[in-house]
Image 1: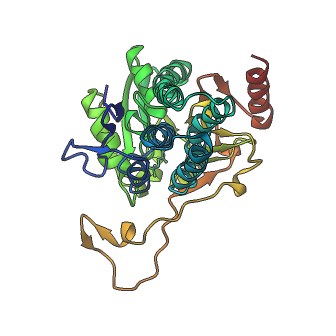
Image 2: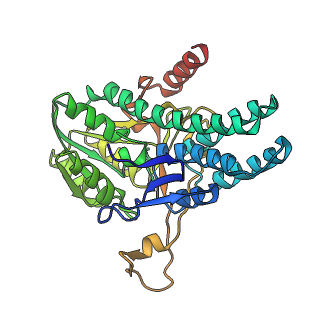
Length: 351
Ligand code: MRU
């Protein structure tokens, strides 16, 4: 499995995704500020990977602290969490990851647990979340595999694979599980302008697994669908609102509209941690705006006239009416999504 990120005694080690597919190099973050830079600069990216990175960022911040009393450490933890939370706004997993470690810290600090014990406990939790993430991807992959055709071509957008998680992946996890079960599937990876997660990352990781993959430019989807070349679409998610509206990489919404027009199923695959029951609908999801240079430049070369206006929203929101099903590790959800999401949320509270 591709080691996307890993807790080491020296720090958190990240596969540098800005250098793929040409170089496989790692970046070691030795403090929480470096972890924040890794997230902001997209050295690691993808909702599940940044969720666990956020958790590891809080853990490393607490572990490296020289505070000798709880009040001093409390103030430091507040600063660590705020710094990490200010990196990327859309993927709710980041806040989930930070909050889980902060909640554990708060409960231990309230009991005046010795600081060395607190350090061991938060590191253990961050590592547990890493293992959980891989287990969730495998379970949701198995839950979704039967939805994919026995034979056919699946279109995916962005990278919702092992690289976007601690391993295996969400949308690509479903594809991997289907292939493991004997489905004869090949994949069309949308290139995913402007950051090229599809062309660089999805193509790279699927080819490593010998899953036949073709890269298509984003504007080719309608043509391919009209020719009967796509049997299903599957994407990941950065935040799913309580009504099923789904934020994912910019361009996802267009794919979903096209899929509906051509009668092709459109699936979203995401762990439960991506569902934000506190956000009622998609209009309330914050959309990250990124640097204009991601659009003006390609491979270091400027492609646009100087000073031209630029749009660069990193995500869009697909209204739930375009979504055939949401595949999670807790089961496959279908419309009406307000009800299916609420049912699973309630079951989790009772469990
Ligand atoms: O900007 P990125 O590369 O972090 O965006 C990633 C995506 O949009 C993925 O599709 C999404 O995180 C789902 S995979 C966990």
